[in-house]
Image 1 (cartoon, one colour):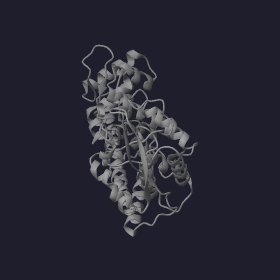
Image 2 (image 1 turned 180 degrees about the horizontal axis):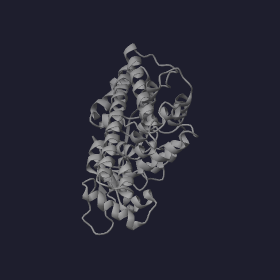
Image 3 (image 1 turned 90 degrees about the vertical axis):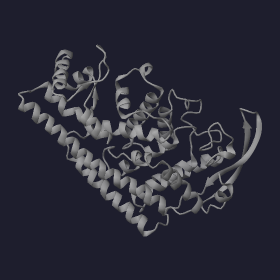
Image 4 (image 1 turned 60 degrees about the horizontal axis):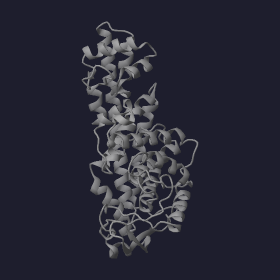
Amino acid sequence: MDVDAVGRSPIGTLVPIGGVDPRTMEEWTYWAYLPDPLPAVPNLSPSATAAAARAAMAIARLDEAVAQLPRPEILVRPIIRREAASTSALEGTYATFQEVLEADFLQDSQMSYEQREIRNYVEASELAVQNITERRITRSFLGELQRVIVRRTKGDTADAGNLRPHEVAIGAENRPIHEARFVPCPAGDHLIVGVATWEDWINQKSDLLIVAKMAIGHYQFETLHPFGDGNGRLGRLISLLQIMQTGELRWPVLNIAPWFESRRKLYQDGLLNVTLSGDFSPWVELFAEAVEVQAREGLTKIQTLLAIRDRMVTDLRAKGMRGSPVEIAEVLIGYPVIDVPTAKHLLDKSFQAANQAVGKLIEQGILMEITGRRQDRMFVAPEILRTVNG
């Protein structure tokens, strides 16, 4: 961390910290950055305000399009998993989108470490979405989600779900703390008060445009870094929960992480530059661009998926097919990877009927078997998979 530059931050102060390196048992001293409480209405440039307004309009159009669907929840499933793949990749955990989808049909012992970790995010995201209309964004709620995110991973320590009791350093894994890119808020009273103040800010009613509030709240959360692990993933999930809580987005169909995944350094530098300059405007503009682009892309993707579904159904009916094959084709946009038991459940018919229907979709080139096994087979709809992952 550039101590001199961070020490000149107009929106925070450096606090001395120290400890013992468990690898060498040597004592160390350094500095951690303590951010000031967020202002009720941060001073933003006209261009940042305009960017946040454009992003909000793009979200409104996306929400309206999803609201017109007879079963919006069908689209939610793959979109959450797409976000899971990218938000985890930003933290260095990589799995293909297909592997993330396959994890839904695997036992825990059958998953790779990466699949398990990303699957945890899926479960945390689904839990959050189920509860956000009834619960505020609080330390206790976030602790529950963080505990799910790190379950059965290296972050699953005795402190999971609680504020970290120790110092952390960003970008210094297995290296001395003075080589860190950034050292967030010190543990203890500073962190407890900082998170409580952030919680009040995030939940208070404000004239601040929601996308700007998402961006600024995300900066503060990442700068506090409240938990021992999972802060990046949880912080990006909070942004989605914020806009769902306002009612401006009724379903979790906004994928922000893929935009930042391909611009990882820009994302990291954007956060750090707020600390160095005290100016929220460039970060709000960057965040708003991500939201606007992804909302527009999400709308296009939904329209494409619906067109693919309608074409598949029309082609099947033109070939004289009715019943189960058509019913499965109608829901494949929510299940780009599927197995027969899931098809059976969706159809509410016998295993044999579901298996036969899947077989007919394979014959038509809509599904493709991907395991090479005779049992516990899984099938992919390649065109749908490519579209969701695009």
